[in-house]
Image (cartoon, rainbow, N blue to C red; front, side, top):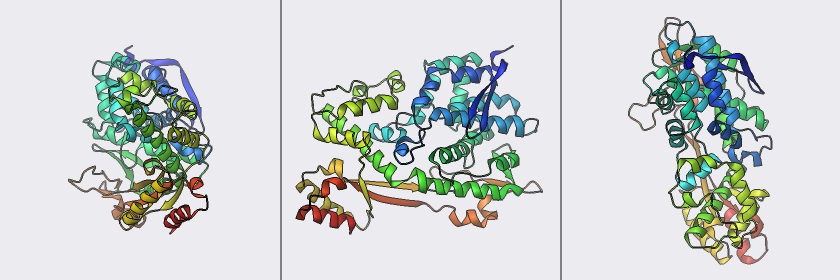
Length: 429
């Protein structure tokens, strides 16, 4: 039997709190799961610094990746199998893309990427295509199979239906992380009727569409996503922790570049500081490595690095206040001067941060990052764009919400002297 069609002698199952069980029968899928690059995802949290706000949010990208795989497996094996619009020959590449879509995420993903100007999607491509255990497994299917999987994740694969299962406004990725993140954070916002959505999903040549009778389940899904972003993903305390994390890495890089003699040399970061790292060095990084350095750097002689690391490790986070950069830019300039007078380096202790989300959008031809909309399939087979049929979705379509905040160490501004009182007055005014 060809490797791509080989089944395990006995089905493997993962007990999962969101999907109950995750089922694996394909030898290729099982072998990919057991590669070192995929196992690394156990050591990367799904929600980065959010565990410092919601104490249950310790789940990993390994769990999420399995969840996305399971949703896609159910869609194509239980929902699409036997339908004329679904090409069964696309099954394995779809499953592998679902499983591996987050493979390139680094430690504390987005914060780490911002500091070093990296792109986890680029690293996903590299892990799939270069000399890795994942590449070796995929290449056993066929020499061009790793490229096919990479193309699905990169959204350049010719079968648009396959791409839409992994990346669209109603894809398996979102359906898993909303429910999983809601479960582990303990909130109720992210729960929606996924079983109903899976039952009304229909394949077309271009993308997945939704049977018209499932419109209300999709409305619930979109509103769940909206609430999760503003109640969990953009939580200001989690953003405070992320700000400190980024400032730790900025400070360490600055110290290295200026010749500072570290008590604990940052050997895992030096190639990143120099922008000369190899893929194997990126793969070697996980959150346990960063946290080890943060623990050690709490004893560094540099007071800023030591303080920031202590704040992150022991959750002494920055306070925050609302900030409108359009109308308060003069105020920020005044704050910079006051912080300098108070002996606080504003580069590290006065930080602005913004969050922005577009919960749903209809098709806007020619626009950058244009989004393919969700379509409802009517009784006569016609397709109607969701916001044209749903008043709920129409109310939020194309409306981007942005939030700006300023972060500062309130505990360092409580001395009671006139200067500190003026800083607090400006921050709270």
